[in-house]
Amino acid sequence: MKAAIVVFPGTNRERDMAIALRRVTGHEPRMVWHRETDLTGIDLVVLAGGFSYGDYLRCGAMAAHSPIMTEIRSFAHKGGHILGVCNGFQILTETGLLPGALLRNANLRFLSQDCHLRVERADTPFTHKWKKGDVFRTPMAHGDGNYTADQSTLDRLEGEGLVAFRYATAQGVVQADDSASNLNGSVNSIAGILSENSRICGMMPHPEDLVDPLMGGVDGLPLFEGLVEALVR
Image (cartoon, rainbow, N blue to C red):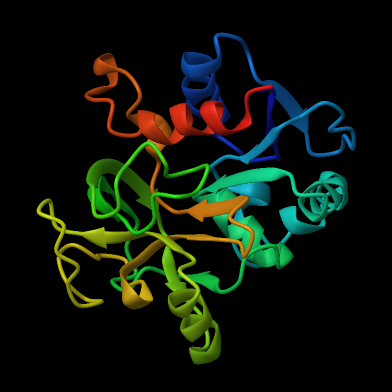
């Protein structure tokens, strides 16, 4: 699997993502500066976390208009696989590659702590190393992670099974939107969603930060191992 990590001014999680991808592929992912427009030979595009363009205007709004995004849209329309984490998820919603929006956290505070996610589907390239209903621990680090969408979009996400992950307790219980397990207040406790063809995934927490025992655990490793199995040539 050949992966590319897009780097914008203000991106700061590209090295964390590179560690995760190197762990499962055995080689370095390609770092793509946002002004580049060549994704030749790439199987997976990753939009990593950080504060692209300093989060001016809205998180991800300026990055959505970077030169590389034209190529990423084309990559997506051709059926390419894309993973957007934290700021990457925000960028995907700003470009319209995923529906909805990420608003300020419900408590208006930056959240930097562990959370638990429940796997809602186990038949996608991003989730197939888990079983439906599995729960894993993962760090969150964001100030604008409150996922929202209009009712018709929510009905479609829920009805078509496009929710990949939900915030939950360690026991897998999904609570109210303002509960201790859903601190950013995301509607329906949504932590990650999928495109209609299941080839694009956006999520707010950071699975790349738990892929080695030295990091404190390997809870996030199945996501990356599953991508290799799904995309290896």
